[in-house]
Amino acid sequence: MDSLKLTIPLDMYTSLIKECTKLGDPLKANELHQHIRKTGIRLNLQLLNRILLMYVSCGCFEHARQLFDQIPVTDFNSWAVMIAGCVENGEHSAAIDLFISMLREKKIETSGDHLINISFSGILVCVLKACLSTMDLELGMQVHGWFWKMGYSRNAALSSFLINFYGKLRCLESAQTVFKQAACSSNTVAWTSRIVNYCHDNNFEGAINIFKDMGREGVRKNAYTFSSVLKACGKTGDISCGRQVHGNAMKLGLESDGFVQCTLVDLYGKCGLLKDATRMFEIRGNKRNSACCNAILTSYAQHGLCTEAMRILNEMKSAGLKPKESSFSEVNLVCGHRQQDGLVFVKE
Image (tube, rainbow, N blue to C red):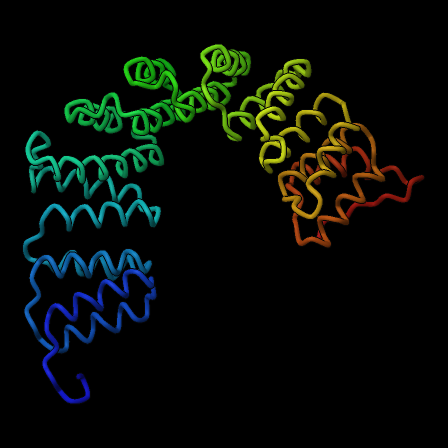
């Protein structure tokens, strides 16, 4: 049609924009938009918003920002796409600035249309993520207030996110308040977020107690729950509790999970049970990752098993895995000067 100089209807452009959005191809997205511009046709706001979404989906955030600034009259969807795009591209401060500008210029009424409320709640989640990255507790609390006003205070998924938000900002009382107010009594994610929060606050005994409460309440546990509480066991050196948690994971068929296995390697290594740590490490086979290798590497070094530590370093090198700076330093500190064993560690 283009070579025959036939007029391309808007609905065909709409289909092409949808296809580019789905493919996520930045070159095709840019070519399509340039072609539309050359035709000189007047685009309605709905189509401009689709182009914005296309650019964001294709990773062309700068192009999206330029187009957004050129649109004479925007609507809620225009702002929503840009705020989500900012968060997706790590532009968290810009996302907050856009959100505040949207409130000032568009004056979103959250108690009105139900569909707008649903879309607005999605934007609020994006803003919460931005607040978490910028450590903006004040705005985050205001966003929490909007959720309350919109009737989402008992939404389990959203409450889990808020518990995580307050936990990372070391506001454990607020996190606990959200947990109590929401319908989270049987929500695995919410309970696990509490365990993670206590770990972030170095209250490892508290994290273990929450795990025990989960068992008493009959709350289902997942792999992240086990890996989180096993870290707490490792920090406290409570091997008895660690073994019980390990047994619980085995009963639920979660021992084979990669995160759980790596945490078990770290737990047993920290507690000096190197045979158990090695057994869990060997179970991983060719699925071992950097975290698992670094855990066993540090354990061997701390207990003076320099030959084993060198073997792990060589295996990591062959697999293209790099040791953590702290793990490598530990090996050098403990084993580097044992000349009688011929062990000299050189970082590449």
